[in-house]
Length: 325
Image (cartoon, rainbow, N blue to C red; front, side, top):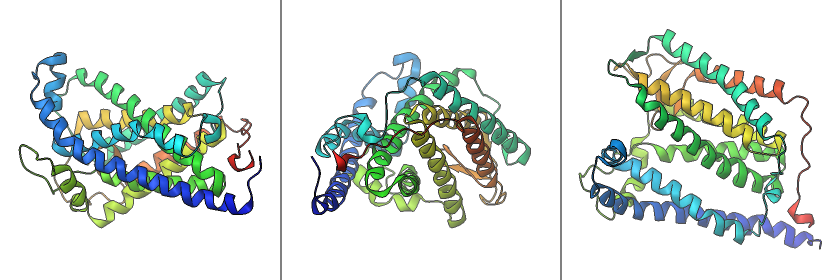
């Protein structure tokens, strides 16, 4: 079956409307569920799961809001894909990979050296001071967080969003647009100054979303944060299109998250003007997950170069075209 030009041109507009509706429902649902999740978790014994639940109970409300929206994004993803008439991963540009282990190794080999370079630059900068009471018991939690976030974000941004955009924009433009979306949405994951009550009300999530801009950092740091996220999105998207799978980008993404969170558990930024060490380094943003400054950008450049070298002989998979089916 071949679509007419009129129908083919209408598909992107209609599909983009569904995606915007999906984003609205995710944010609205997360905002309404977060206060209920907070109250439910506060009712449970804090010593459950060897004290892990107690740590969750002490989390600020904006972390509940962030997690609620992430879970909502995953739950509503299946209805979105069905409404877009996407029935297989191949339609998103993802092919069954026989090179899973090799792709994972590629991601780790590109990620580990870049993370080590970044951590060395952090220590040398003098912008951080070590915690006196650090405990290695945080490592399993950091590893789990790194794996879960990498899997969820790669499937959503490099799987669904990038795969959909490639159908109508071409690979090059789709990579850039998906990187912009990836960078922009991370600013919703900032602490908001809109909610401070000890026991959130049912409208607290909506108030936090409405006031999220109050939690934004100063303008120079916003620029550097966006640059870090944008170039990370470019590299991860390119790896996905080059391999036709998410394994390499998941491994690289997980390395970055683990390295940043591990460093955050060891140190804290010195309490001086936040832009005192710019352009080289500044306080990490988005709950400490995004490093800021030239040092992180050099680290990303190294990861990208290593990825290009490791995948230089990889044959780019055929792009599935939904409009030709």
